[in-house]
Length: 639
Image (tube, rainbow, N blue to C red; front, side):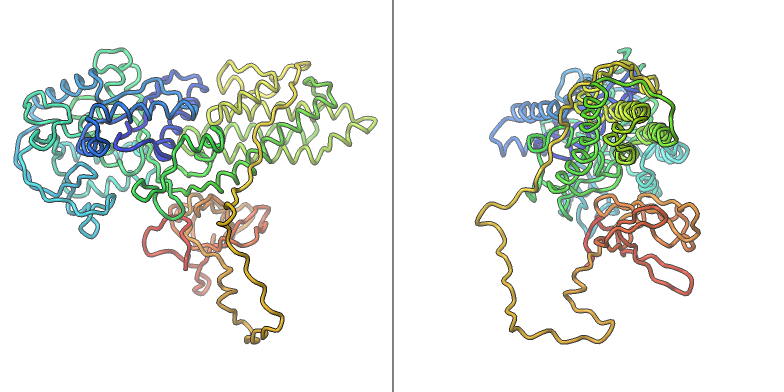
């Protein structure tokens, strides 16, 4: 089977940041996963280098547009190797072959009558580099750039996009996986419920020369989006290269939600006009926020990939980004959150499991893989848990739910650590009949580690390589062929374990910048007045941390008519058990934003650890969830 996965080509009006890195890590992880599955994979990324904003950025840098795009494009291509990102092709829209492909497609679409010349007056956003419709504005401003668009009247060439509106609506409705997650397909269908305007595809050279000239009128250059989207074809050698026939039928694009409309509406209609089948899938992810604010270079809160790798290491960065963002939703970034993931999930859980397992094999098994003996129920349970993990992992990775795949993996990591504690090999080794069970315990642990190394390979390739080296494992074969239990060869020498992840400390503020300690109140201070029963002080209420949380998954709790198990983003992902099953069906509350108490001590309900409480009003026997009046960033505090 074949796989063609692409990132957007990133606009070079700014240097690479966390948002670019996330899109590209997602695509790289998916490419690695599909290669592991045995597919023939082509993974493409690159840079978008034409348009008004490039000219402005070049002028600000006192460079020519060509000098500027060469310099910034190189920053993007050099940003990816330190993140273990390995694209098969890096494309630039200033490449000669791309310019030729754009010319050929424009001429073809023009000759068949889908491009026409007309005068147009509209609202032009310089940030978006396109005309906006009145319905796209929020309070008279562009919702992305928060500025009023300029009214412009000029003659231009237009693509008959409206001609394909009915076809596109039908295509989205009849292909539920065409745009994922589903909320973005719904958003586009809502947009298409009103008449679709034709697309202005040119800019007069009187106001812009840094672009690809129209082949049929050199007084105009091509609109940047009509140019940029064609990169997905250029990179396959359209139309004659065999790669086009091999990979275009399976094309999948990864984008952020801010460029949904060009990819979900402009691009499919362009392809339809060209007589080509559209791409197979469009995968849309959310934004990374700094606290409660969207990451933005204008706010000075941009995180650079190079700095992240230098501080935390490549595999920690890859793991954190894939684990902490529920694909499609916004997520929050902070250095403290990365440190917490590294110390808890990676150093304490996986790193400790790997280190102590191999250390004990060295001590009790002479440093070699033992042959297993008769399985006890506890050993079989561990083996069965690995089988469930592999099934869940494959299902979730296929549909870009990387955080869910990693949850399944870390469930087994937790079970394996528990398995060590319950078996206590150090005590078992002292017992007269302990050696028989000891061999089985260590064989089970080593097989579990082999399978864990297998599934983390696309996400943390360096960590997987260290684990496989320690286990003496060959890494040839596919996910399916390597998933069968019992592939470790008894007698294989196990290496002395290499630490996988160091523990990190949260950075303390430099001396002189630390917050002064609060002075102790004098004992002679008057004691506070005693309050009536049931009344609390403002300070006591202030201890309750209320947050907005988005429900991303819900399911009924087995053996309970009252409880639902909710997975929420607030902004971190957590599990909350809520007694709302008699008032709500799980499928009805996915995507709903609710109010939670975020700082409750975790409690176990029906064997499930609940990390907070969902607030609801009680109307008779019916519960009504507390929500917010408009969409809010998950994790926002309620004051």
